[in-house]
Image (cartoon, rainbow, N blue to C red; front, side, top):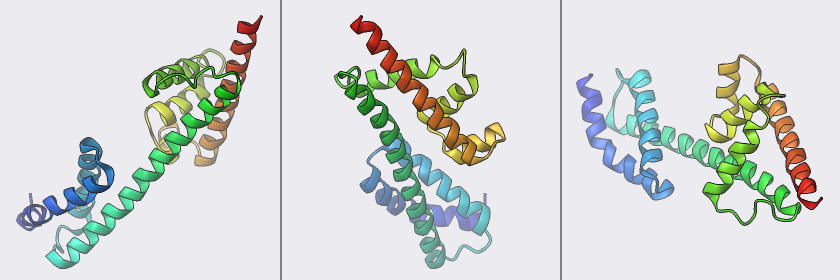
Length: 172
């Protein structure tokens, strides 16, 4: 490893860790973001490591990665909340469950798509359970991000129908 990078890492790690931990408060997520940020620095700037300028670049990268992290968490919450709210409208099918149970229930609904809609099941699983971004899913499946978004909406609509049908069956 490059000596100047090692020195830069030792000089900035504690401050960078503290910067993220105060915002995220989750050790594994902080470590993942730090790893990604230092990897970008190493791959892109390893020959030009000036401590002041590189530190600014590092914190710029950390800020962008933090914003991406928040967006991802918001999307996850929004998707789970969306399904939970819809189910809640259907006489509180899911609203009484805690988050772990909600994720298990979500997993069950996603796997109900497997026989008729395998591609939708894969995309929704990757998006909500594996927590991949649309871009990552698009790259893995070799489709566009717009297709990922469309398939995700279709899958959620089908899950809504499944929830509604289950509730109707319970009422009979």
